[in-house]
Length: 314
Image 1 (cartoon, rainbow, N blue to C red):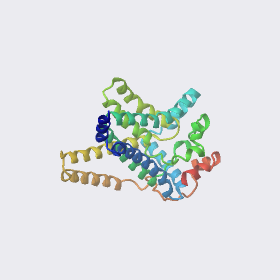
Image 2 (cartoon, rainbow, N blue to C red):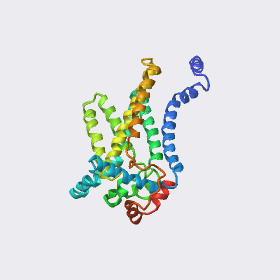
Image 3 (cartoon, helix red, strand yellow):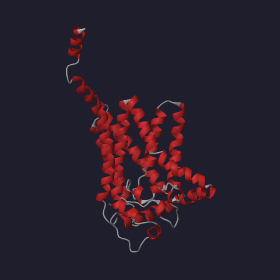
Image 4 (tube, helix red, strand yellow):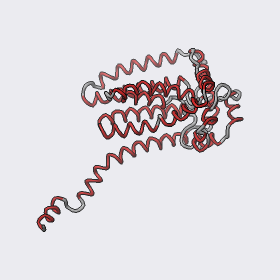
C-alpha cells in the first residue's frame, strides 16, 4: 500500500496538477477576455463620439431615406404598417424576435462550435471580430438615427408593445442608439446562416435560409434599421470573410502578398474614382451642421425622454 502511495506521488508531483489544469483553462479564459474586450470597446466608442451626434444622426437618417427613395426601395413604412394593421401579436413576435434571435443564438452556436471544432470556431470568430471593427468605425464616422426615432414616418414598436425597457433609458445604457449603420443583426445572421448551411445537418440548412430572412423582416418591422443598413451589414460580412480567407491563404502559403497587393490597389483606385464622380448632394458627412432642425428629431424630442440621448452619449 505504501508503495502504491509512493508511485502515485511520483506520477503527480506537488503543484503539477494544478498548473496543468490552469494551463488547459487558459485558452477558454483568453477567448472570454477577447469577446468581452470587444464589447468593452463597443461601449467606449460612445465616449469618443462628438457632442453633435444627435443632430448629425438625424441628418444622416434623412439622407439615408432620400437615398432609398432615389433608389426606389423606401419600403420600411409600408412593411411596418402592414405588421401593425395585421395583428398586435405579430408586432410583439417581431419585437421579441429582435432580442431572442440575436445574442442567444449567437452565443449558443458559438459555444457548440467552440466545443466541436476549435479550428472552425477561430475562423468564424475572426470574421465576427473583423466585421465588428468595421462596424465600430462606421458607428463613429456615420452615426445614424434608426427609423423608430423618426416618428413622422415610423413607430417605435418596442416602446408601445414592449419590452419597453429596450427603448427606455435602462436599455439604452447597454447599446449605442445611433449605431444603425451597418446592421450587425442582419450581417451576423448571414454569417451564422453560413455556419448552419455548412454543418451538413438538414434541419440547420433549412434554418440557414429562415434565419436571415426573418431577421431582415424583424429589424425593419421593429423600426431599428433601414433596408440599406442590412445591405451594408451583408457587405461588411462579405469583406470580412474575404480578408480572413486571404490571410489564411497567405499563412498556408497558397498565395503571396505580391499577388494580392496589385489587385487590391486597382480595386481601391476604381472605388475611389466612383466616389469622386458622386454628385455634390450626396450624404452629408459627420460634423455637418443643420440649417434647421430635422423634422424627425423635433418629433422625437417631443415624444421621448432625453435620457436616451444622455445614456447614449455618456
